[in-house]
Length: 145
Image 1 (spheres, rainbow, N blue to C red):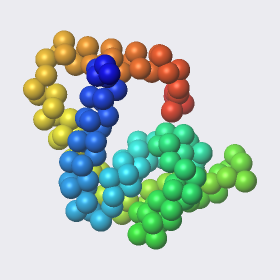
Image 2 (cartoon, rainbow, N blue to C red):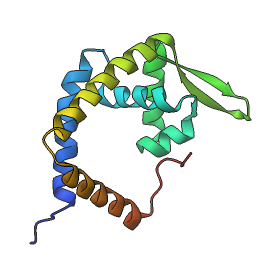
Image 3 (cartoon, one colour):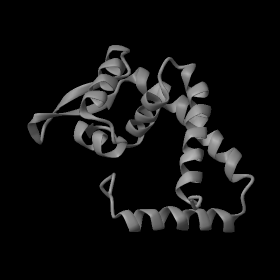
Image 4 (tube, rainbow, N blue to C red):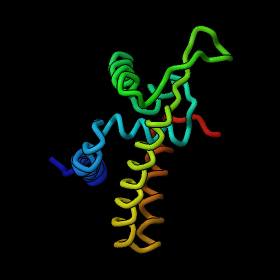
C-alpha cells in the first residue's frame, strides 16, 4: 500500500503539537482544547456557540461540556445574543482573558521556535499546501470577516 505523503505527516504533526501543548497549557488548569478555545475567544469574542462548533468541530454535547467547565472556572460567560433571543454568545471574563493571553504567549513562542528554523520560501510552500487543502475540501470552518 502506498504511503500517504500529505495526510499522514499532517496527522502526525497535529498529534505532536497537541501532546507538546498539552504539557505547556496544562499548568493553567485547562486542557489543550480548552486553551485553544480561550485563545480563539481572545481574538473573536463575543462569538456564537454555533461558530465555536463549526470552528472546532466538536459534537454539540462536547462543546457544551467544555463551555460548562470553563464557565464554572470563571474563565468565560455565556450572554444572550442581542440579535437572536434563542441563542447565546460566549465572552471571556477578566480571568479568562488573562489565561488566554498567557496561553497565546506559549503559542507564539512555539510558532517562533518552528519558523526560526524554516526559510521564507519553505514557509510560503507550506502555506501553499495549506491553501490547497482548503481549496480542495471547499470547507469553510470560519466565516471570513
